[in-house]
Amino acid sequence: MRAAKISSYGIVAVCLAVILVPLFVLATVSLQNSSGTLNPLGLPETYYWSNYPKAIEVGRLVLYFTNSVTVLAVSLSVTLVCAILAGYALRHGRAWRADWLFSYFLLGMILPGFAGTIQSFLLLRELSLLNTHLGLSIIQVAGGMALPIFLYFQFFKTVPLEIEEAAMIDGCSPIRIFWQVVVPLTLPVTSTCIIVIAINSWNDFFGPLVYLSSPNSRTLPIGLMFFKTQYSANWPQLFAASALVAMPITLLFMFVQRFIIKGLVGGAVKG
Image 1 (cartoon, helix red, strand yellow):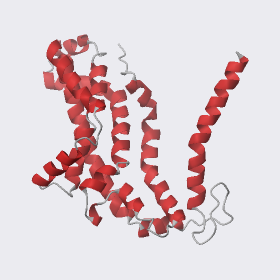
Image 2 (spheres, rainbow, N blue to C red; image 1 turned 120 degrees about the vertical axis):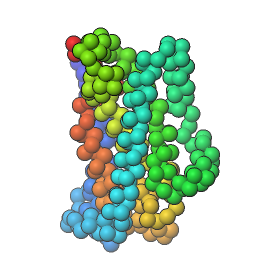
Image 3 (spheres, helix red, strand yellow; image 1 turned 135 degrees about the vertical axis):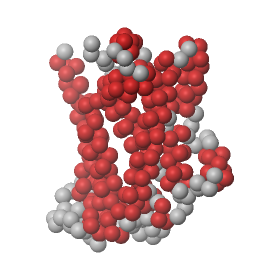
Image 4 (cartoon, one colour; image 1 turned 90 degrees about the vertical axis):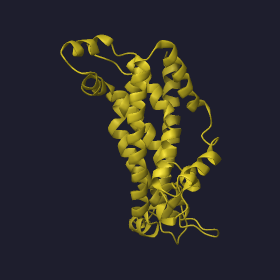
């Protein structure tokens, strides 16, 4: 038993090191002098906090932040609404038809996301949505719909039908039952879907690289690439910009983390 505890603590220590060491390097390098010798694993003698405002100005992070938030807001809201409606419809559909449609949606979790890049590019061009944030949001919605539908469908299967029947007896319409009775129960799985969709959209590099060509339409992952030129790179400013880019998603994760495990296991209904 003692050996098992020591092994468990050792595994936890290794996992913490894998997570904390990159964060430490990110923080220390972002505060060092760009003209001096970098020491990734040591604390700087002088903390250059000016790297952060310089990174915001030089990297045009305000513009790229606005673009990323715009794409994230559209893809997150559309994905959540469509996924919760699809999961609820599958739960109450005919058994054979619901199972067939559910299997069809699961193909989105099996097929690689790059498989339809050429077709998506040509489609956006035909719709005049190429090089627009709306077009990129549509691509992200289509590519990230499968997992939320799976989570909502599994969650709705755990909700007793007696809850909806009781609301119907009290005179609630089907739409009111859905929005005022069923939707509030989905908080755990909705929190899980929010963090998954947000991370995928915020860190998306391939999508903006392919579908956005205008410098003013770039998102944050593409903007970080321009801190490094062919012959040199301002590593402290690049690391400072990377820390700023990672901060919003980190704060979002800290806010909803208590619901994530509940959402992944399908949630629970208290009677």
